[in-house]
Amino acid sequence: MDEQWRITVHKTCRRSGICAAAAPRYFSVDDDHRTRPTAGPVAPDPELIDVAEACPAEAITLTDLVTGRPVTAPAEPAGGRGTREVRP
Image 1 (cartoon, rainbow, N blue to C red):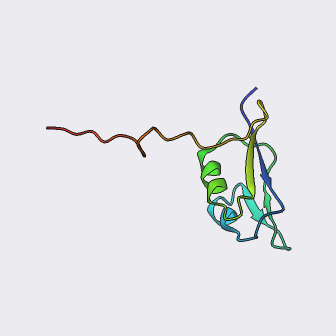
Image 2 (cartoon, rainbow, N blue to C red; image 1 turned 135 degrees about the vertical axis):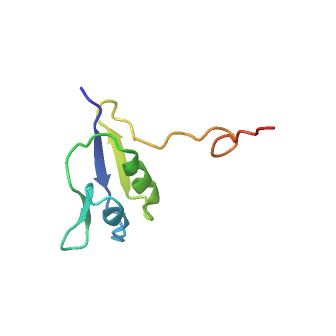
C-alpha cells in the first residue's frame, strides 16, 4: 500500500485562511469561513508539513495512515540548517 496522509483541521482553527491561500489544492474555506481539507487521504507532500507548521492556531495535523502516527518535519542536523562547505 502506498503511503497516505490524513489532513485534520481542528476546532482551534482561527479561520485565518492562511492554509487555503498557501495550499488551495489541499484546503478550502466554506461559507462559514471554516477551513476544511479538500480531499480524503492524500499522497505525502512536504508542502503540507510547511502549511501545518505555519498555522497560527496549530490547528492542522497530518497523520500517516499506515502507521497511525503524526507526520512532522524531519529533524534538522545538529548545529542548525546544515553545514557550509569551506574551501581554501
